Length: 382
Image (cartoon, rainbow, N blue to C red; front, side, top):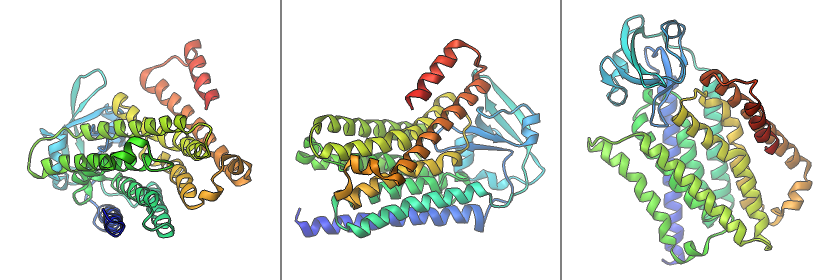
């Protein structure tokens, strides 16, 4: 492909990615601010992992025995997936009961008659969602503007756009226009752009240099679930979340192998800084949602978003200010020192929060020496 054609391809796909993220922002505002639901469900759940784990319960639901960590199975004898896709929640009326079916961690099912709740004003957590999603998109756009046409800037903009789309659709996904359908496309798109970014920046593995077309494979796979759903073909929604998780860990593994290959070279410093951002700010968030999907832990979605912003800041700095991207020079910066200190403090706080959830959800004996030793080992390692 000629340089002109390559530049046009990058400009077109960059515009499409940014446009998709902006469309997600518009749909999010429509579903949460402009035209919110006339009523709210008595439980809040995170559907982006593919398993509708209950994260918050209303006082009525709590009194009825519903607990965070339970899974929403059905509403009015319709599966939760069918109920969301058909937007049947629009039929609910405030104060009128609906029959909810839940599944506990032991696999047992139970039903409860729960009334719909009146709508609530826009919360501070939603403002944080918008702010972090917009900052992701702004960082990607800024780097693209400063390094327009550059391969690293292109990969970074695609990544930031896909992540911001997921963040925008994370609040009341089912109430947004095509919210659930978009999430089936957004999650594998994050997988594809993660692979693209980590095989481009800070360096390209030799096998990618010789076979650059391999980057297109994850993008092709991202289209499959959306097309199947549009055609009315049943598709396991949680498969896309686990596909994204596997691809992210694979991409980080590629980066780690490249760091080992680059040992002793000038490029090793760039890889060190990216790995630091991955370990402090990126992988813990992925692990958090993976833990929620596997063990049904109820973590509020918005709590970790501000911390999640540290990773793209580090990558953006590395792309734009490459000449200053020497790890010893960065380490001497008081601003960088303070930022890393805050990040590690946040990681420690997350460990404490996770431990508290484990104690409460699984009746872990916090006085057990095994628990203390394990927790202190992980905390000291952090």
